[in-house]
Length: 328
Image (spheres, rainbow, N blue to C red):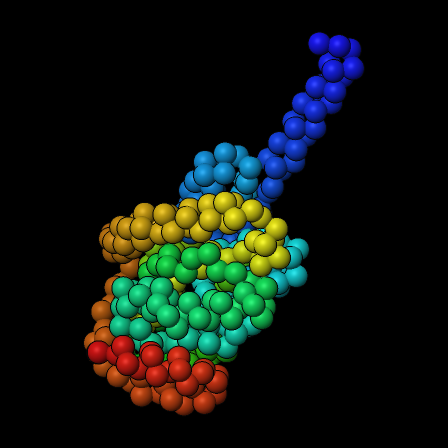
C-alpha cells in the first residue's frame, strides 16, 4: 500500500471511529420525583440496561431520581421544550397540558388496577397520547406501569367518609385532586411531595395518601400511625420522552425505547403487588393501626360526585362516556 493509500485509510478509519463515538454519546437523562429504591426508579434503571443492549450502546439512559432535575411539572415543561430528554411519573401530571389526563386523579374512577391499566392501554388513552405528542411535544412510550392503589395515612384515624369533613389532607397540586377532596368536605391542601413529610410532622396537614409501599419506604408510618385502606385511586406511571428528542433518533433507536419500556412493565407490576403486601405486613408489625373501609360505599359516594367534578375540571365527553361505561 502506498503512503497516500495508508494516509487515506487512516483518515477513513479515524472518521468511522469518530462517527461511532458520536453515536455512543446519545445520552438520555430520565428524571423522576420518586426517591432512590422506589419501584419506578428500579424499573427505569432496568429499562436503561435494556436500551443499552438493544442499541449496542448507541443510546444510554441516565436515571435521576428524587427530583434532582426539578419537580414533575418542571421536567414535563423541559420535555416540551426539548431541554430534558425523559420523565417517568404518574400520567396524571400530564393534565397540566391536556385536561383529560387528570382523570386518573379522580377518586374511584377506575374499578381496580387491572381496569385502570386496560384503559391506559386502550383506544381512548392512546388517542390522548397521540394528541399530546402532536400538540405538546411530549411522547408517551408506555403508560402501563402500575402505581398501586392509594390509601390514606393520617395522624388521626380515618374510618368513614364523614371523617374527611374538615380533614387537612395533602394533595398533589393538580386540579382533579384538589376539587375531588374539596367536594368531599376535606380541607384539601396542595403541597409538593418534597414538603409533605415535614408538613405532616409539623401538623400543617393531618393526612396524605399514596400507595402503601411508597408510604412505608418513606417512613410516613413513623409520624402518622393510621393507615386506611380505601384503595381510592389507581394510577399508571408513564414513560415519557421529548418529541423533539425522539424524532432525532433513528427508527431502530426509537423502537428500542418502546420495546424496553414495554418489556419492563410486567416485572414492574409484579414487584408493586409484592411490595405492597410486604409494606402493609411490616406496618402492622410496627404498630400501625390499619383500617379497612366499605369500599363499595366509598365508591358510590365519590362516583355520585363525578358529574360535578366533570363540570369543574372539564373532561371531554368521550372520555367521560368511556370511563362510565366501564364502571361495575
